[in-house]
Image (tube, rainbow, N blue to C red):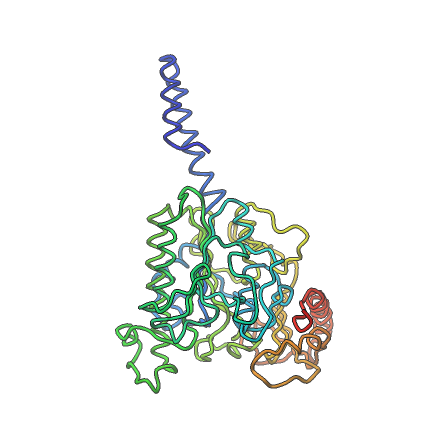
Length: 483
């Protein structure tokens, strides 16, 4: 694609040939300008994903939460906000694998949250990530913030983000340590950085802005994957922000303080505000697709909007999160969609919005929701029900089909250890389910009334679907105990 200056130069040359060619000059200029505008904004927008860590369904302002989040509220107003949006899992590592691949996390090799020092588990290198798809389409790609999909340890070698499609990466293996304040465990492109002064969310945005400024070819579109640590514990936020939500606690109560928890979210919104301002400085808002969500529900039950359960549970409170898609000029503004969607839909939907092919020969568990985003279509049909599995959760599985939620417990015993043990994988892959419960989420979003005895025919139909999806997923799952 030639530049605007090239267009004017060519038009000037055409104009020198004959006075009557003035119209040709005008047409060339207009065509070049339109080509430049639409080729970038309509076909190859910048893509930015903003992911919170452990942020609940009712934490931020636009979802009725207590935290002041004007930047996120404005972002939601500029596009489509989902009232029923789901994480990929009730804990972090699996949910992140789902986001990047559009596939159930067990297919990708991730069963639970990853502990690099003792586990082989990681996002398998064979998986095709959104970063790889966009990189192949000519995008510059960067990941900044929490990773938690496996990094090499002293004893175990694992792929790094650059092996999953990212040109540049600045990450922590898991949480910011010792807390969000002055973290010491960031790694930049494989090299440890050491202690960084400040708060994690602001540090992550500083890095994102630095990368945006330092790109070699600023004409190329970019994919910026920004995964914050907040409000995952151990928490920390500036005292002047914490004071907005309550008394600043002493050290004994600091890490359990609701005021500090809110302060971390407020601080993140301020960091996001700085990033959004930078994005508008780089290009018109119409040139950037932005997606915002959380990796799973909150560990604080009062922040789940009254939904049952919390982080680590396959009840609605553990898996329902905020979900916002913004692309001015393409995605309709000020839309609140009641359609159930989730992180599993991100990869196919970005491909749908950008006109890119999804990975050939790869089963995607997510659906392309771009028709909902562009046209607010009410006739969208999901190709496969949403499905969750987490070994330590009770219920262990959940599935959403239409307005119904079907959940079940395992029919086998397993250790009570909180740490995932890869020797459990054979039992997980072969294990069955019992105690099926049915809920109508439209009439009973808090899952208070089990309808399984009242509607046995619905249970039978959904159970059949659940077991089929489960069998497909388990057939793909890696057995790290043997590898």
